Amino acid sequence: MPEPSIEFAERWVDLRVDLERGAKLVAELQRELAPDHELFGVTATAVARCGGHCDAAMFKLDDGRFAVVHLSYPKSPPDRAPWPMVEVIGDWDAMAAYLLEHEGL
Figure 1 (cartoon, helix red, strand yellow):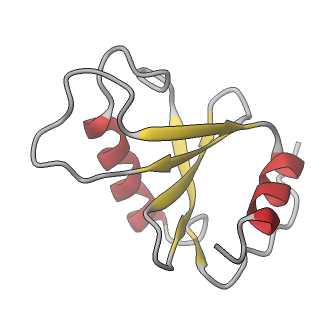
Figure 2: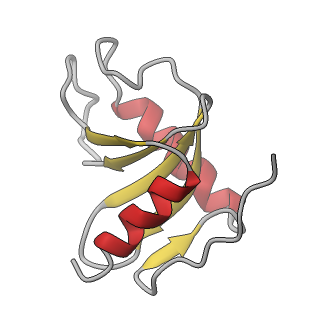
């Protein structure tokens, strides 16, 4: 099923067209995940990142859900969860609703 056309709010940077930046975010996500984190071992693709004052990045998970992750760029990876903080979202419609809800934050 093709992805619906999503227009991100101004503060979100669409990484579906910037694969190099997306790959860097995925690498950072994987570096920050401890073995007991809920996203450890899950394949993720970067979809967007907040270009505003927040540190959020949105990833599409291999099961079709989305995760908004607050990467922290620590000097050394954590040895246990809950960092980085994550909010798992449902499908494309739920992701679009999330973006609208958080547009002004």
